[in-house]
Image (cartoon, rainbow, N blue to C red):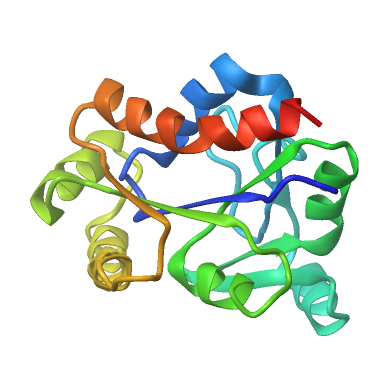
Length: 194
């Protein structure tokens, strides 16, 4: 039986990518990353097929219409989604599939038979999140306002009891990673014992 996937969710800038990198550095062979599709342009250093599958809006709409996605969402005018094939490829390899998705995606995944572990990564505050996003230097004032508005809704959803198995406040990266590691270690051990 394939191990249960791991869903990581949290506002843009909460530090999901940093925590994910630490997890993969330490336990990489146990995990497979479900590479999402997006219609947005690559950021510097991002590679097609590794960070995202960068596709046209027409390609994405066709695939969604054909039922090829587990979840999809529109964020800041760009489409994002997790294809069934990306998840199945990881599960077929016997690894724990990681899905890095937003709250819209979480709501859609909850309607499937995947039964993942849900982890919400949150910043210490909305003000702290704004500082992190500004420090990236990739946002216009308009896109920053949209991200913060979305973050507010995501934080509200993340605070609802039962929506997530684990909520981690990413104020100190080492502490947050320690919490994530402690949460997921039993899953890794159970997978390894099979």
